[in-house]
Every structure is written in C-alpha cells, then in structure tokens.
Amino acid sequence: MGKDLTLSHEASQSASFYEGGRFTLANRDFINAASPFEDVAFSERDTLRARARWLHENNPIISNIDRTIVANVIGGGLKFQFKLGSETTDDSVERLNSEIELAWEVAKDELDITGSVHFDELCKIALKNRFMDGECLFYLPIVDVGFGGKELKIQPIEVDRFALGYVEMTNGGFYDGIEIDKFGKNVAYHISDGAFEKIKIAGKNNKKISSSVKIPARDAIYYFKKDNRFSQIRGVSEYKQTIIDLKNFAAFMRSTIEGARSRANIAYVLKRQNPEMLRNLSEKPIEVINGIFVQNLRPTDTLEVLDPKIADDNFGVFVEAVLRLIASGRGVSYELASRDFSRVNYSGGRMSLLQDYKLFDDDLLHFSRNFYRPIFMRWLEFEALKGSFKYLSYQKFLELKNQIKASAILLYPPRREWVDPLKESKAIATELEYNTTTLSEIYARRGLDWREGLKQIAIEKDFAESLGLSRFNNAKLIVNTNDKEDDNE
Image 1 (cartoon, rainbow, N blue to C red):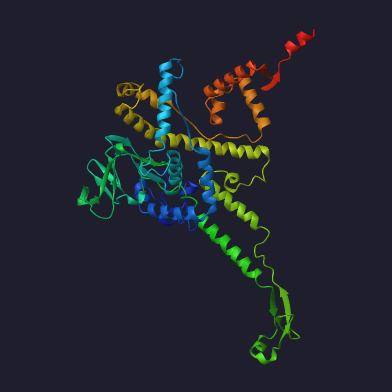
Image 2 (image 1 turned 180 degrees about the vertical axis):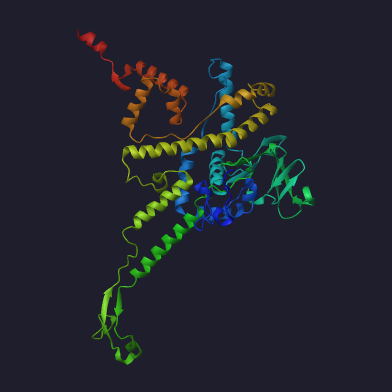
C-alpha cells in the first residue's frame, strides 16, 4: 500500500511542484484568471485605453517609441508597386500594372471621406492608434460623389462608440460592439450614439443589448493585433505592460525636478540653538546693506549653504534601468527608446538595430496583411466593377483575384541607412559572392525594387557609354582613353 501524499490545506498553500504555482504572502497579489480573454479584458479595456491616451499626450518616452516605430515601418508612406505577371515581358501586362499603379496613387489622395487626410497619413494614424488604443475601426462605404459617380471611401470610427455589452447568443455572441458567429468570426460591428437605439440584440437568459448602427464586417476594417490568446476578439492597448511604470516614473521625475528647483531658490538655512528667541522680534535687528535686508545673527547662529541637488550619484543608473524596463515592455531596444548609443560600441549598437528591424518587419507584415492590402483589394474590385480600367475588366479581376492577393501587391518600407556603410557594403558583397543572399533581399532592405534598380543601372550605363564613360571599379566613372592612346601611337 502506497503512502498518502494528500497535503493539508495549509501545506498546499506553500508546497508546489512548480515554483510558479506556489501560494505565498509575497505573491498573493497575483490575479489568477483562468478564463477566456474577453471575460478578463472587457472590464478593464476602457480604463487601459484612457490611461494610454493620457500617457501618449504627456509622456515623451512612449510617444518617441511610437514615432520611431511608425517612421521605420511606414515613414512618409509605403512604396507601392503592382507587379502582375512580373516574370513575363508582355506589353499588355506592363500597361495593366502601370495603369493600376497610377490610378491607386490618385485614389490615395481622395479615399478619406472627409477629404482632409491622405491615405499615407491615414496609415500612420492607424498604426499609432493600434499602439495606443489597441484597436481601430474603419468603415468602407460607397459614396455618391455627384453626376452619377460613386467612389469607395474610408471613414474612421472611434472605438469609444462601440455599443458596450457582453452576451452569449444561440449562434455566436456579442462582445462590446462586435458580433461573432458560432465559429468566432466577426459578423458585424455595432455603433452606439447614445440615442435612437433601434437595433436590438437578444441573448441567452433574456439578456438584451441595443445599438444605433450595425456595420457588416465585409464593409469595414477592424484593425488590431492578437497578442497571445486565440479567444481575443477586441484589441487592448499595447502600452498595457508599461502604463504603471511610465506613470510612476514620470511622477518620480517631476517630484525630483520640482524638489531640486525649490531647494535652488533657497540660498541659506539658518540654524539656531535656541529657537525660542524667534518669538522676541525686538531682539532681531534688521539692517539694510546695499539695498538688501539682512538680519543680524546671534552668537550661536550659523548659516549653511543649501545644496540644491537631492538626487545622489546613482540617479542616472536608476533612470537608465527604468528606461530599459519600459523599452522591454514595448518590445524595443533601450537605444531606440532613449536615443542613447553612448554605452555601446559598433557591434552592440548594430545588434540592437537588427533586433529593432525585426520588430519593424513584423509590424510591416501585420499592417500590410490586415490593413493596407484589404483596403487596396476592396478599392480595386470596386473600380474594376465600375469599368474604370482599360486593361482590367471585372471578369478578369475575378479570374486573377487570388494571384493578385498572393503576389502582385508589393509594399516597400522606408529606406534603411547603414550604420557603417563600408563594413556593411563589404558584408553584402561577400554574401552575394557566396550566394547567401539575393539582390531582391538587398534592395528590399532599402525600400527599393530590384527590377527597377537594375533597369536604372542599365539606363545609366548606356548613357555613360554614349558619352565615352565606362562604369567599373566599384561603380566609379572613368574616362575611356583608349582612342587617345591609339592616336598617340
């Protein structure tokens, strides 16, 4: 008969096979939420969003991180190319590509329903909004623009307008403004304006929710990023891990600066052995010396200069440690968050940048998949249906739709400059020599298309040769003197 391994209630609170599963006084503030994501997040999402907005407007650290990420992911605007059948030399395909690229470039200036924001700027705002609020909603209506014309527009909608509520339905559910089917797929988005709640949603146990507007999911782009839970339906601010640290650090810095400023305004401190003498004002003669009122000191009085510095020599170390914590919470390097590269050498700084580049690439891929490409495909389908293209009918669009989605849309991020051009160019040359990289990868890192680059090199080479110049020896232009040497001979 085996031993009884059952533990008493008291023993079970301190003993555990896994250290992380122990219950002690030190970790009693752990929140053990073994529930679906929305059961945990719905009660705190609005609070996180409100605090994140305050931090974004008042804290330079977090706004600097967001600006830097957006500048490296989108910059002044993603470079767009449409390359359908790029491996062919068919003129009709080239004309189709050029036609769509030009039409999209024109459309980007008019997509915003208010006409006040260019699409490239809208992209930057959407990405920043995802960081701060954790989510953003865009309605894609077909708008009558007069004279019988219709155009696709983009209408941003603040997530604060979501109809709040949480009910389970027979064939799905309703989670704070998002209606899903039984498979968890978004069906519609419900907006509330506080009045005229004409849409009624009935759930189990006679629970009901009302909304003002119901937007079908096919007519909207709901942009957010799932973190690590498949049951997540709505976004949560991406500042969630740093909100408290940022607020406390800002308060500490402010109190430190204000304390130092107050002490700096006081030049001296009077120390007196017998404070009771202060009560006798007649025994405190005051004289005017050079226009300044001076109180005579008593024999036992002393003056001490007040040091305005209240932070010790470890203050800088503390600030750096907090910044590293905040940077880790946002998934970026300390150097990116602080713009301080004084503590790293070339290799260390380059390693930090390479890790940040991976973050930028991940955000670019997510942004293009979930925001840019869906909007472009919706616009392209509508324009093809209208008959706006000479080389792309609606029937042809339906035939090529999957090919277009898979390979025709090319987006290039802002150009990334080298930290040390000489070292990095030698490294690239070595990689090309040993076939461990390709021109397409190298050009893409710098936000360029390798086909366009090679075409431009060929044009410049032909033009240089027409002027009697040759390109060789690391692309240097050198005058061809063979003819002159022949003449001399």
